[in-house]
Image 1: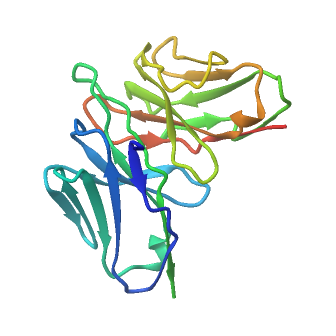
Image 2 (image 1 turned 90 degrees about the horizontal axis):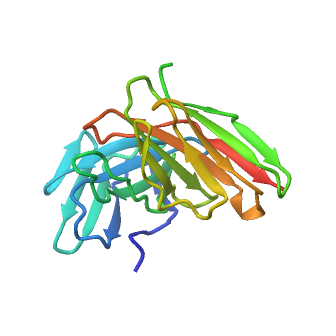
Length: 114
Length: 113
């Protein structure tokens, strides 16, 4: 099983739609989870951190299900500017309190149409 | 600078040539990461530094890949005897101590012909 699995999409949705992506991870020891957004030919940028059961930030809601080892991202009222690839990122191990590496999924491509 | 700076932005190399990619992290960022991103894939971890110490190099695909950060700031990723499969975008990221948010540079797109 791959460390991080995501549906590559593309998800093509109209403006205003609600869309959800799921991501499964294999390392049960992962403690921190993130969603990064990557626009075409650009670098990834942090969208949301996901701790405990979930997190909400405006139109974006991320949820974590540790028992089933998946995290989800829900986008409400989609905007054209939401078009991007969304990368699921569980964090790897820590080094005595310092930072461990992030394991990126392949990403889910979202295209919001007018 | 205000963000993570990488150079060159584009690099074309002939197969067998050596290349060096530079990363200038945000000032004060202790942690520095190198990732490799092939077309249509997510970034793949290569190596991680905390200050000048290379704490993890498990992602380096072969001994042709070498990274250093001698003074704990600027880092260089060197690829010797480049192969076509090395063609990818090489991303550098840095972060503050104790912070989990990574700041990425714009990457170096390497094309090996």
